[in-house]
Length: 216
Image 1 (cartoon, rainbow, N blue to C red):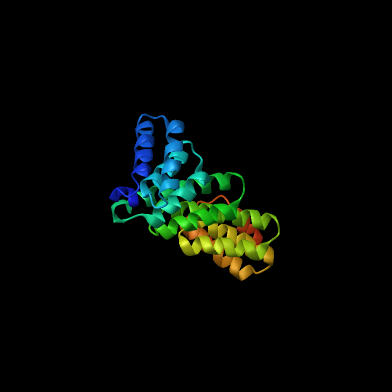
Image 2 (image 1 turned 90 degrees about the vertical axis):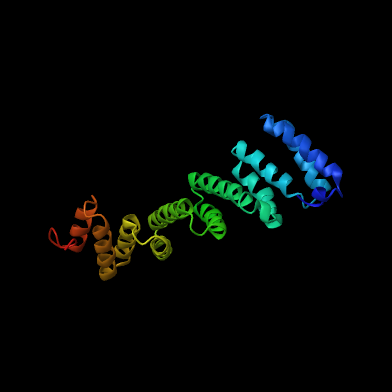
């Protein structure tokens, strides 16, 4: 908490405790005005910001959950360092998923990158980021933006090198660009990762090579 924990702004603590009693009974809508007032009375009331974020998480309002949880993380003392970041990551993941579903790849990437600043080793964040980058690469390729597509596939590979789909996308992009050597190199890497890929015949035909040449 902020000053409320020292007894300096007892009204803020009172508002928070009232909100908490509603929140713990599952009466989330009733709780929210108390948490808001607590933050208005004490701009350093970490717990109130956390519960404001948690309210929006309960409602699956991912973007709305981010600002109070960012504030909580910024203000958070050691006591809540392991709690506030987890809620914030949940909000960032949810917001990224929402943007991804709308085709807003860059928005999703921004949320996931922020999450990785909080937890660089999160397999979930890394996996989601790679998925979005590959999808973005495919979309860029379909728009004829070959250079941007190559960058997107390349970034996915730099984050997670064992991504056959990213190498396949890269191979397609280089093929469209007319760089057959780079396309062949990317395709070979994809097939080493997954020799059973159904796109094998496409690249054999594209490169004019015989069966088995790509996977030797």
